[in-house]
Length: 93
Image (tube, rainbow, N blue to C red; front, top):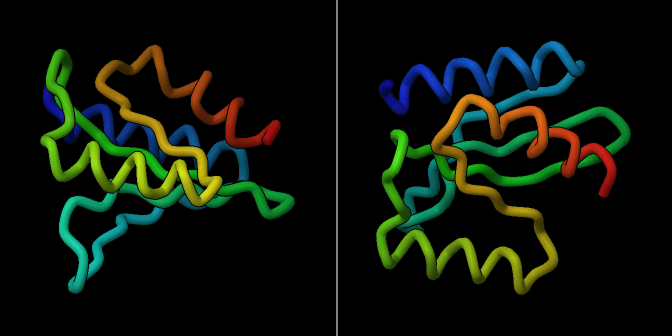
């Protein structure tokens, strides 16, 4: 399964909950997560998308940890069955 398929499913699932799953890039900072998740009632989180069994690169891990230290929820998604739980976690934060 390709990362693109997982990412597409995440976008669709987010939209079904009334949210936005925005492609996130930062021209001045490499390694940021792929997606910014915005859900109703001001709930947000970041998601790094990966192909099944793949792991974030060291710089991506550094950025994930940096965002977590700032108090943001950050997830790494490499399986379709993770999507619902990640969205649940963002919605209930």
